[in-house]
Length: 154
Image (cartoon, rainbow, N blue to C red):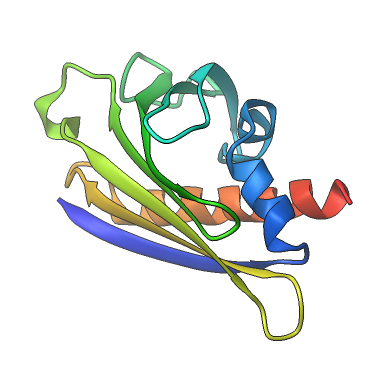
């Protein structure tokens, strides 16, 4: 198991970014890498609240972790600090022991020096069978989508 960290900037206030982290419709739009679509099955945005999300490859050549072309993960919100931090504990829904185990994703929001919000996403406990480059690329794509989503919503 390993950890990754990705940071970026969003030209919007922390309040707007935080709202996008806890809105099922927003999650379905921004927390999806390029070449995939998202479906939010369950989303109870409160501490202890559960969520379940599937990401499906647009092309049939994509190999999923949960099904032939789909990655499904579920978990709960472990900590919510308004406009500052969201901690999610999650796991892939899979029979593959190489992809098993619990992961923690912590998203931290801080005021950027020139305005807007700096966003830091730390993944901990990622299974070794998930290529680190894939995780980092997917997180960077999602962060860029988050910026487009929140900046366009203003």
